[in-house]
Length: 294
Image 1 (tube, rainbow, N blue to C red):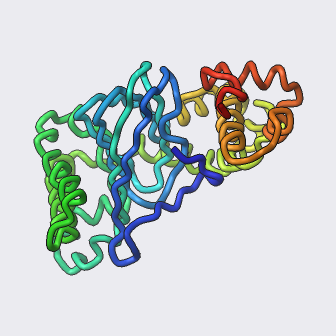
Image 2: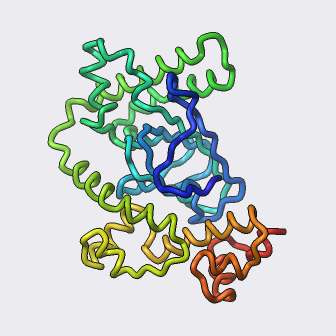
Image 3: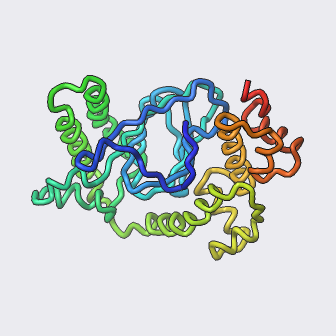
């Protein structure tokens, strides 16, 4: 697992001409509530395939439980974060690609009618399609083919991946296109997402600064009550809990990658009291800072 310095992520894909990649994510001894996917967003689409364990992913203010064999579709630009639902071995695959992967289809009228509206964010697929239309799960064998092709790397495997992914979008759009109407809910979620992105990014990069709920609420022009409700929907955690999690994650990185003392690290992440820092670290990580280094 990596700890992003910026909330906006720039996935390292195969290249500009083939913006696609699989990411294999695994947490062997995840604890209940453990952060298994750090809060971030990117301009790419992401399909999350759960393989082992159970998790809850918050995507643009809404929580989605995911169990083995289930799939989530994260829209381009969507804020997303994930937590383990229990003490378990968690494993999932992220299929990440940019809409430009299909730029050579632009002259095809069927593509422009059925797929382009989703790639251009005019419409959004349901985050969990099979929860609304169970037959959608039959399309997910296309994802299994994609994973196999990545492993085997046979002749023209990139073309097979691209075609399978395009077919998946065609089948899903054919299922959900008639239901795309005003999209007021999506508009509201997008508004909150964009409103909170600068604040979340600031928090990810200023671990040592003290920020109150009141000052954070002012930064997004909300009163503290509505700020706390919206923040919990977006991140799956309370504001204080999220601040603590950011600090502890950064502290873990510093413990593993630097020679700073525990007291120095506590100060760098905004904890003036080393004893409180140790207690906080153990609460989130299940071990002490010195235990992590051992």
